[in-house]
Length: 360
Ligand code: QUE
Image 1 (cartoon, rainbow, N blue to C red):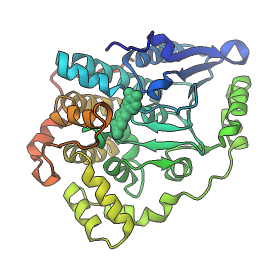
Image 2 (image 1 turned 90 degrees about the vertical axis):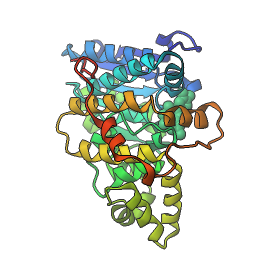
Image 3 (image 1 turned 180 degrees about the horizontal axis):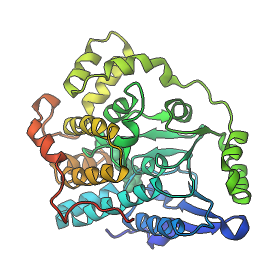
């Protein structure tokens, strides 16, 4: 997947920093024109750094943030994946997900604590850099979402494992609506561990570099009380109306509820790819029960290799990122028309030798 913006290495800055001979491993996303959407070379560079640092006892902390003003990370380079599917049978697309998921797994299993600064847009692949981290900083600029239903993909990068564990069906709500949460809502839902004013991030980073082993204390000292989490007002409705296991039953429950909120969310669920919604609910249930993150990523990789080959993916990316008409034609058009046997086939493990393997 060629990148017209230039050398891959320029799109992520990897450097040891801080006191005591560079005890902090720094990863800074720097592809601002594409809102830091992850490319294969970026994932390769991050995975290589994590592999090197995990073998180095001098690394006390890994800090993931972004350069520029345009937000943390909008996702993955799905336009390039789409081109790969249309032009080369999807080999490059599969290679992207294989490496991205290795990176997610390396983050989740990293021996030193990982901090991710979710300042600004944190969506899709960006969520995959945030949720495996032990410390997840939200700010007043955080805009968090798993919007893959809009492009006929599915909530991946470990989201079924992490979101499946959230109480009150918040995971199903996020996966089916693509709802955007602010920083206060992320903290309330447990997606973030700390809420800091963006103006204090520079001081927070300086103190992490000076005393990385004090990370927990530094964040506790600099955290500020968030404003009210608007999502909390609808928590009871989310738990009740998103409780069903079937997409059709969630849509019926939303349609039957008299609130304006339910009418708005019914529209959001209805606009998304029906096949994605069905796959997402199944993956959330499996992810919630999954003990091993490596097994989670192996399952998601099998699903990803097949989802990108379905017409909904090329159509969704076309509608959102290529033609930008936001009028995708989903196949099938409704959840009721989705063939359950096709869902089972998407979820099946890959044949030996074709599946995902961890880097470690
Ligand atoms: C849903 C998505 C994505 C999206 C928009 C959606 C997604 C993604 C991007 C994106 C945004 C800016 C870029 C880019 C990709 O947008 O996953 O390369 O420059 O990566 O509605 O799932």
